[in-house]
Length: 126
Image 1: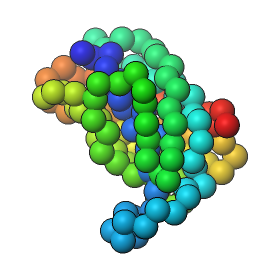
Image 2 (image 1 turned 90 degrees about the vertical axis):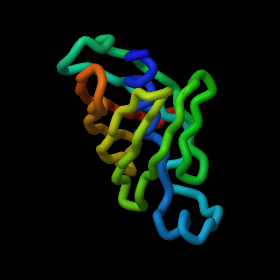
Image 3 (image 1 turned 30 degrees about the vertical axis):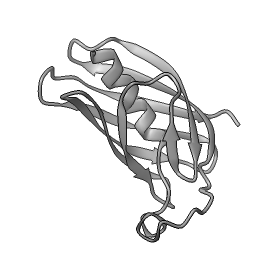
Image 4 (image 1 turned 180 degrees about the vertical axis):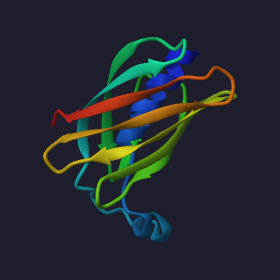
C-alpha cells in the first residue's frame, strides 16, 4: 500500500495541462506531453526506499497502465506540478516542476496514516 502511494506520487508529477484549458475543457496539446520516467525516493518514514515508473502524459493528463490508484492534478503551462495521488483511504500530495529541457523534480508527502515524505525526479523519454 505504501509503495502504491509513493508510486502514485511520482506519477502525479507527470499529469498536468493549463488551468484555463481545463476550465474550458479544451483539448490542447501540452508542452510536457510524452513519455516520462519518474523516480520516487523516500527521505523520511517507513515507506519503500525508491521506485521508478513510466508515465505517459497526454494533453497534460498523466496515465499509468500499471496503477490502481487515482491521480488528481495538473501541470501548469510553466511546468508547475501540483497533484494528489490516492488509493483507497491513503493519499500523497505532490508538488514540483517539469522543465522544457525534459527534466523535473519535486517533493511528496503522505496525508494522514503512515507518515512518509520524499522527493521525485523526472526525465522525458519521448
